[in-house]
Image (cartoon, rainbow, N blue to C red; front, top):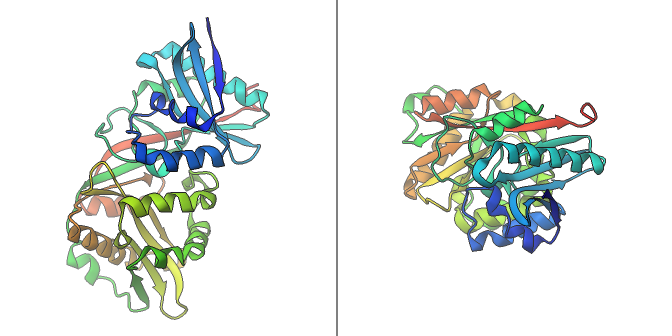
Length: 330
């Protein structure tokens, strides 16, 4: 007998997530995970075979239009189980009146990331970089899911930014800011969120209702990171925040980090400011014994890809997030 069991208790869900993610679930991560599970009223759909769980997918939502899913995995990576769990996921979304499925998005994403890893990607253990069999994205494509976002990870050992990249650009109109305390960063939370809203295209915003989980993610960064890993840019004339490069920690290897957020107001781009910001971030990192960086770059973002390649970072991983329009597939 095969069927679906729905689990709603957050603590019980926490004990099931290992079925759908390879990233280690350290006990000290529990407070961050439980916060997101409760905030989004997440549920687990368990694929049961003869009273044994053989598959798992987490479902949650921020509005009644889109049902997000994450932590999708089945025992033995068996294709028939993947297909059956997809079928049950679609049925659940239909039954609850959603218009679209979107994922995988593994909350909290600052730890578990998003997307199915594509074939040929590096499988080294890294925060924010889930590893899975290439069978998963292939089966989702076969079942009618479309690619909503393809993100590339450029990564590698880095050094200082070559001086010629900096000398080409004067930034006299700007001030680069690195805060000494977490409290100082918390004080610009609203400015930071507005900067992101102004500049990030919809397809680059993966975590739903990101402003509402900001404090939870910030606590994670505070536990494992350092304020020097966040570089902000202000326009001197107005003191307005116009850019930021945010490095988030990798608890599994403290000599590395994720360059997770790269934002620059549109009218301040193509002036070389990004080179000065990444130089400040890399210099601060090297002082702390950190010399390895990974990014999450949308395949549509040419400027960041070009910068990564100029710094000697290599494309080592690709992850794909999928969508499924339910009203067209009843």
